[in-house]
Amino acid sequence: MLCDKGVGTLLLDLLTLTEDLDYLTRFDIALLTHRLLVATCWVKLHPSTRQLPIAYFGASTGAAAALQAAAAIG
Image (cartoon, rainbow, N blue to C red; front, side, top):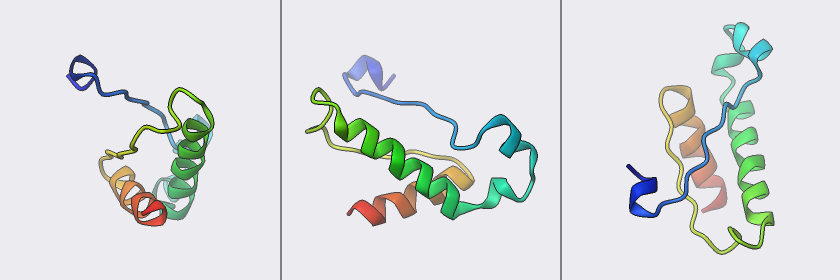
């Protein structure tokens, strides 16, 4: 639905398959936030996406990482 409205999206897993098997790693909000911020930097490096506004959406621990990432970049 977002794409139909002209909103660009990027879906990613913040943990590797091996990391996801470790129950405690799933709740490492600092790690998830760091990975989300790295992905944001990657998007901002490309000329075609550099000037676009960034928004985050996440569920469960992804939501916590999204809130922390949003706070970190202002």
